[in-house]
Length: 273
Ligand code: 13P
Image (cartoon, rainbow, N blue to C red; front, side):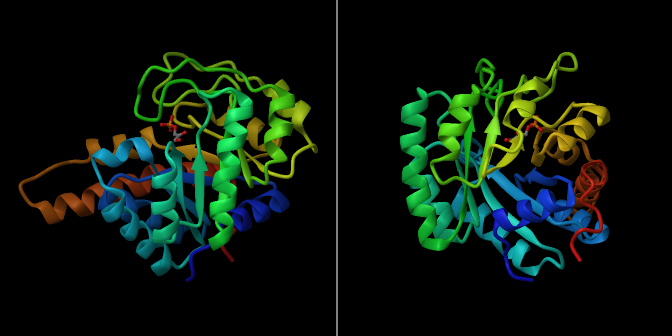
């Protein structure tokens, strides 16, 4: 199956009233597990890796594995750079064939964030890749680093939407990593944005939210939901033996199981037809 553009998957999700899971991968076991889950459930998925993690797994190695896995998958898969922080990394991902890239300018003043995102929109246009931006700020960095949450302003979201992006991650009280307590999400922000955006809404910090919160978020238009911590924990906590091949199989199986839980919750099962 060819690689899919992320915008196409989100467009279908919008029409169908469901969300596409965007699952973060760190190694072969994660890649195999999320693809197996998607194939068994006939679900479109997005597979992603964040720039901050690439000091452990260089993009030059992890990236081609993700792209190859997507090309061989029997369901639509888009390959996405999560939390791109630098233009060279975005360029490398695009050169490897990623069909979507994020430029995370959430720590910059909004005008500068938009200016950086516009540079990425111009780069992505050459290969037709989709672009995700962040407005407001998701709490805690993708790698657990300290970073305060900031709620997205409606005006900033509308201004960013005009930058030619495909997907918009909004700060609504969400955070990466494990929540100390179930967060109070700012559904009012999504209500105010309803019907006003050309880009599709993205939720970061999916691990630890309740089933009811996912249902409500999807009802309010959330179309891409990121899951990282639960994928990484499943792979890390899978049973280990002195047989590396058994460990790879068990690791992938553990990742598959947790991925399937989210696919079912997001309503994307059976949507690959
Ligand atoms: P979690 O680690 O909380 O699942 O968040 C994932 C994410 O948003 C990656 O960008």
